[in-house]
Length: 168
Image (cartoon, rainbow, N blue to C red; front, side, top):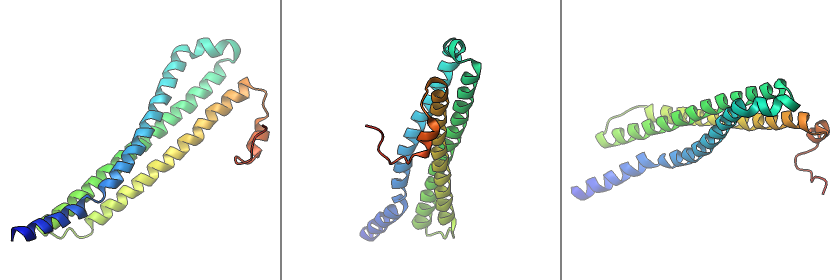
């Protein structure tokens, strides 16, 4: 009897722990998002502290304000992305709990685990979409700087395929 319970417990653990691998992947994504968020916040603080001295002389306040607005928007997007990824992990944890509870106590939880897992995947996709949006905005900061500080023809560069080799 004990052996059968041990085998059943092993199967229950395997079934309820499988989504943990998804948590590990999302954790890695969260680590990258957190690093980007920290860098954006640090850049905002640096510009607030030193920006007027650096930009006012040669570029004016307009450039500084554009960069601060873009950075603030990026920080908000990253914050929401991080929250959705953490919520995704929470829903995966609830999925594991519901599966373990259902299998351990032979209680039918109907479609609970499926809905929780689907919700976690939707939250994961929303967070990844926001992460992509942050990358697009990060290029806007560079374009803003290049417009002001460089004589490079950005219209020409934007019209080229990103996969074409540059002048070498």
